[in-house]
Length: 246
Image (cartoon, rainbow, N blue to C red; front, side):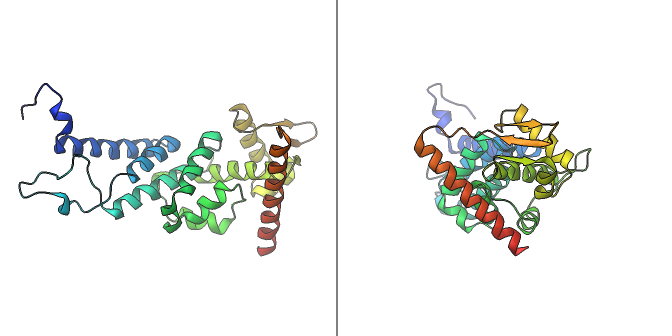
């Protein structure tokens, strides 16, 4: 169809529908390529589109009543669920923490099956096997694919998250003890921590001679120090309660 030169094409409902399809496809491509942090942000953007039945928003001539595509509530919740899944699978770090905070503050996530793991990840609590297994049951095949060493994206994500959770409880921890805490071999825990330190996603250092992982806590001013202390106490209490439950 012919298009005007004054930009009218940009407000064409058909153009908007194609743009929406592109955004959905792009989010899925990022997801399939395991660029989970980017995919999470794209899915969340989609979940914030105006809601409403597509049929009710069309006029008799078949054109949309609004320039902005409206999406069924169920599809918006699917996009939100996908955003949470990708955020949990993303590599631990400050950017992931910000995305998790945004998702956790969204009241709609309380209705999701993945809300339990979202809450624990956002609050820095240890992830137990039952919660991880329940979450794994909701993932897609490519999100559970195994790497050459037999690990999965989920297992890597859980190990990294639990290392961050451990940093809120301990000032230093033996690699052997850390491995037991994470449910992996000490060398696996050391490698995961080493990668996070190298990529500046974890403020710590490894003393290989002593077999220790030492966390560096930048307490800053008194308020930050107090908040950090409270966070460590809460995380420790959560870990003890989880150990007792098991």
